Length: 128
Image 1: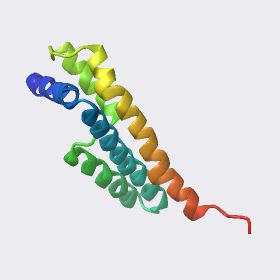
Image 2: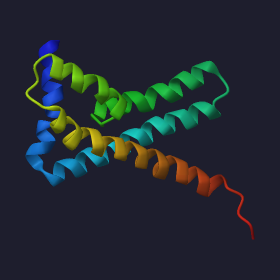
Image 3: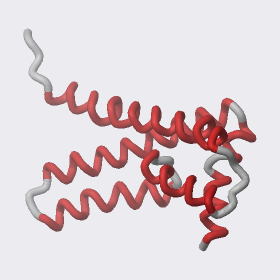
Image 4: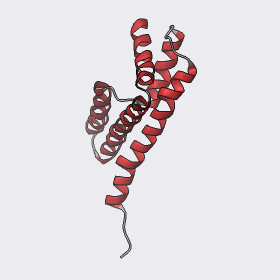
């Protein structure tokens, strides 16, 4: 299990570094899509009236983002330091430059634009 965490840590940083700017854009895009899934699950759960519906509404988007390998800052704040402690060949600078900053910004933008702004546009009462 430790070697798998190390491999995941290196994939989430070194793989992006090898691509350069494209890697940063990829991490940012993956993070936007991830937080869209998370926020979508929360919104759908709010609309459900049953406990089973709330569980399903949260479970499906979260499992989808895990299955698709999207980037989430909170998950990475455990996985990457754990991999570093287990011997992954990355530095703190590698982590923040190639994963931390792009993923945090992508998560913020994804939640704000894809969910927050969309809800605002569809639910706001506009003055005429």
